[in-house]
Image (cartoon, rainbow, N blue to C red; front, top):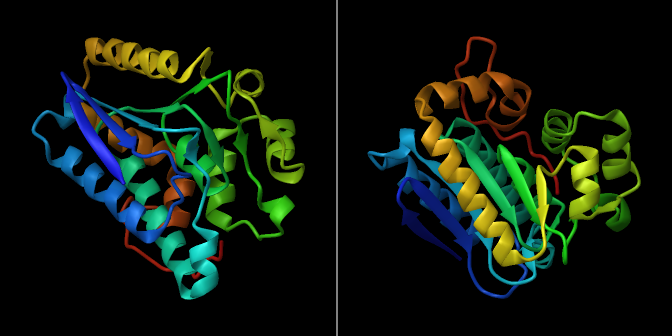
Length: 240
């Protein structure tokens, strides 16, 4: 599941355990519950969220083995991840992903849904694996990719060649903000960055509203965010 540590004005959310952190309904509910707890904290609008993980995986994507037991769970996981991404976009604080292991498919989307992506260089890659495992990519995944990867060539390589992007390559492609030599160094760097952001000050509620506007296309695909800025959860029936 996940744990939460509050360190000053930093909230550190960690996916715990040495497994693959597959995004099944239980884990997604746990993460969303933790995000809601952070949102309700009185200091949230002056804080920063750092998301990281134990083990060699940040997240290896949806729980495909579980989905094979019940096809309706594919849709359920997609709906829950869409809601989680919308939660991150509307959260009244900056967000940092400290990627300390592999982030594949839906796990890659989760990492890129943060404002900053820091990544270890000695192990792990960002990998949109759907082409290789012959799964159609949901439209809202593509909205995240367009919002987070500026270069058309980089988008092509990530989505249409299923490139396994290392930390150094991710920096070159503009996907990763900075790379570090180990998991511990990556988390330490995320903490330093978070503290620098806190020192700058600013109103997290204003920040969150600006981010909602910046990533309007993503919100349209995730929660039906309309042109007036209102939203309503919708189920488009997207597959994995």
